[in-house]
Length: 292
Image 1 (cartoon, rainbow, N blue to C red):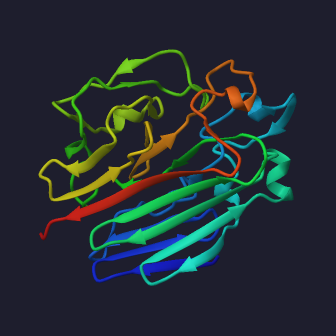
Image 2 (image 1 turned 180 degrees about the vertical axis):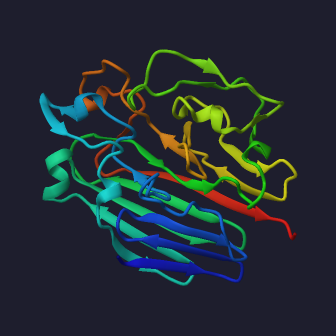
């Protein structure tokens, strides 16, 4: 598998051409991403495109025709081309092909760019409509961070702190689809205390989120990851029993609502990209680690 390595004095990132997936993100030698375990979850940071989660009956309907669509789309199982690379930056590209048109009959270019600074990794996605009709698309990132962030710190001594204290509502996906029920997340000020029990019934989908930034950190603040997602309006929080990870997934779009059977252009949460236009989205991941 071809892997691109980015490096500076403090940070290292490795990105696989397969799926354009971030596989390693380290600060001062400490890796902040979960190490894949095929028996639990074999991902680290999949790119979700052109859908997020499941679609009803695992098909999308476009112009009266049903097309097979795997969960989270096909980008995560596609081979990207490396089109730009320097010591601290790379861009990987996926273009429409006969294979992608079997599931998604549109002309598009998806570019994923990764750039290191002294203290952060900026990820930029660009979706260009290369066709003559409106392009419906969703995009998300699915990073799994180590939980606990620091060995020996109990999981219950970790918090998730939002940049706004407004009430936060969530729904739990039902068979990876969006159900009708909504619940309020119990906050301590701007923070929610994390525990494995929070994920016993699955992930939490926080849709129409006012916050565009959050911080996953230990109670004493010695280790943290800040995630900024200025153009996205939702996240999913997810973990799995036996997995020492917390996924914080910034999203533009979401899974199908239960019972939705409309055209892909009518699917709630989708971006509509005009011919010749490009949608640009960014996520910045900033790890923090205080000296012991």
